[in-house]
Length: 311
Image (cartoon, rainbow, N blue to C red; front, side, top):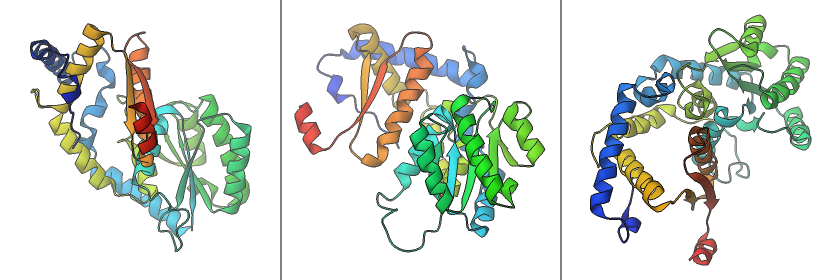
C-alpha cells in the first residue's frame, strides 16, 4: 500500500491552508469518480484492477504457454512511451538484479524492448541478440504508424518471417479493435491480437494487455499484481483526507499554488525502480504539460554517497 508522508511540510504549511486544499482535492475526486470533467472519455484506467476479466489473463497465459512450447527464449516488446514504460517498470522491478548472470535453466524468456528510439546501433545490436536466440515479438501500437515502433517492427517482422516457418504464431499485436495499419496487417497475416481499450490512454495502460501480456510472458503473476492494484483502487476512491491520492494532491497543489514549488524529484534508492521514475515523468509531463502548466517532473537514483552529498 502506498503511503504519503507530509511531515517535511509541517514547518511552513499552515494546517488551515492544507485543509482548504484537502476539500479541493476531494471535489476533484468527485469529478473524476462521476466522469463529469474534461477528458472523461479516457478515464477507463480507474477501475482496471477490479474489472480486468480472468479470461484476459488466461488469454495472456495461452500466448506464454504457446511460445514456451516452441522453445522461445527471447521476446522483443515493441512500443514507445506508455506502450512500453509501464511494462518495463514492472518487469525490471520484479526481476532478480542478476538474473542474466545466474546459472541454471530459466523458466521464462528474456524480455527486451525496441521501438522506443531510432538508434542504428541499438537496432543492430538487438539483431545480434535476436540471431542467437529463439525469438518472438509483441508489437504495441494503436495506429501502427508511429515511426519508432514501425521501423523496429519492420526489421523484427522481416527476420522472423525469414527464419521461422511458424512466423505468424510468433507475432502478437496489441492494437485498436477495428482500425489502423497494425490492425489491418494483423488481420491479413492472422496474428494473435489483443485490444488497447479506447477509453485508456497509453501512459495509463499497464493494466491492459499493453502491460499484462509482457509481464505474463516474463514469468510474473499478474493476478497478485492486480490484487494489490485493487487495494489501491479502493483506497484511492475514499472521500477522505486519509485517501493517499487526496493527501498528495492537496499538498502538491498547495505547494504549487501558494509557494511556487513547480519542480518535483522522484528519488529511488533501489536500482530496480529506475523505470518507475521514467514512467512517472511521462505520466506527469505528458498529462499536465499539454496545457503548459503543472510540475516539472525529474527522477534520480540515489546511493548512500549521493544522499550525503545532497544533504
